[in-house]
Image (tube, rainbow, N blue to C red; front, side, top):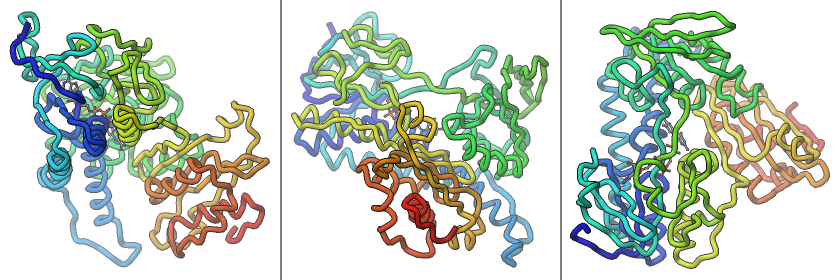
Length: 475
Ligand SMILES: Cc1cc2nc3c(=O)[nH]c(=O)nc-3n(C[C@H](O)[C@H](O)[C@H](O)COP(=O)(O)OP(=O)(O)OC[C@H]3O[C@@H](n4cnc5c(N)ncnc54)[C@H](O)[C@@H]3O)c2cc1C
């Protein structure tokens, strides 16, 4: 038995979007909270090696492209170049560090105890904390032992490694892709999901030639084809080579490059690049911290089974974020965190996933919420839909960004909005209005009768609602 046995009330493993938000909410509700984080910074994947740094690189790419290509507006620059060391320093110091410092401050403000170390579960009421790294203490029971009243698991996920592509040298995961020292001349990305495609756009903007190898017939397959085709066209304009139905077979490192072998249409092909970034998905961190020592049940995909409050089959253990079913997105983790913290405090909270938006920060952005037409049809729901193009919107035209559209999906009988999709400028921000609409079951008339400021990118939403109620204005 280890020494240092201490009793704690609410313990949270992981300080990502799930963990730190659960900690804040639990503290707000009067709980005494301890967060255990093995990394030397708080914020998890999202703040350190995910959402936030990826958006910073995307911004840098956009700035470079704007500097290079503004002749249309009468603006020319002599020469626009990238000092990527500076770009990375800005991303790390001014963006990531600022946000993680902010989380640290918030945890302090809410008197959350933060312990750095790796948690390892002993059973349904006890865990050990060990210094992060190899578990040399595990067998002799070293480390500090905590007996907890309630536990929230928020251990997140890690990149999936595929056969033939061991992460080493020039074969990298998304974290490696975010932390390159130089803009590669040639970059191969295996996996054209949202992570791969966002970074493909960023590095293409920064000057790399990028090849995407995607196993399915479409990149970003979780968005509809007519939306993705707008993005695809733009990626191709940036010089990105997109190869669909491609099966990546092996990556071979040499001192100066990596050779990637893949198969397409039954033929074996090769591409040589500076780096090969593999972004084929993420695996939940449920297999590496002693979960098997507890009675917590997992699904066959290794996710933790939870009820609508995030409670596992063990009543005092909750799980949130990337380790439970549902989209692996930061804002979903935020929501589950508040629900679980509320449930521990005896509040009648519940997760309701009707209006979870999904966004892809490509150029232009993709965003969707609720059901697509096809999903509604599958469920036997009769719908009406309306599409308004950004080409008919003064603000989009004045921003020289007229590509894309807003589509609203409503129930045919009541006009209730059940879904929306946007591809176009500002889609990531615009989807919030439609998330409220879908979540609150507003109907098309509610949107049509809401005065939207002019000229703004939000107006196509009102215009699409006008179409749905039968009185289109600007189309
Ligand atoms: C490149 C990239 C871009 C992304 N972009 C977006 C985006 O734009 N929008 C979006 O919504 N989502 C995005 N995501 C997904 C998002 O990052 C995740 O959904 C989110 O981070 C999940 O939060 P979490 O709290 O479940 O886990 P994580 O953020 O993974 O945090 C888990 C934490 O637990 C810690 N931990 C794990 N095991 C232990 C242990 N045994 N002891 C102590 N600590 C432990 C880890 O160190 C980590 O800090 C992106 C992901 C990637 C990789």
